Length: 129
Image (tube, rainbow, N blue to C red):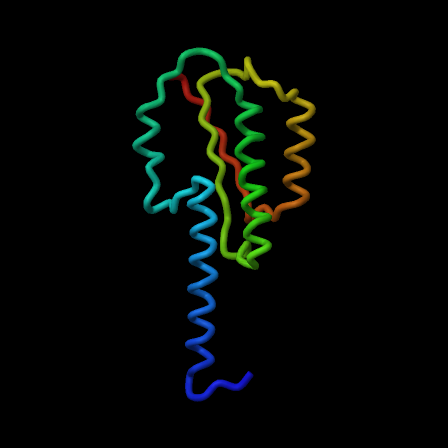
């Protein structure tokens, strides 16, 4: 389609804005926040350990959520605009997970095969609280 005098740029800018807005709505609906507006640093100070660690379950839950969100963004053709960092903070060994070590390994391998490394990174922090 031919647009007169810069109208093509305006149409592209409007389309980009609309796509970004849809992606923001999807992210917000799933409970994600922009890093610059994240409440996570404040919430970390409110963590009070009380026994039991389900680290493998938490790892799989978070990765599954990000994988589903990535699929949604793919459908909107906006996945290339996003990347995810899954931060898992633990104070102990896994004692309460339902997922076995072998199942967790298999699922992480599946995520790695389905997503670009740029799209999903995992950071696990072990701290003695």
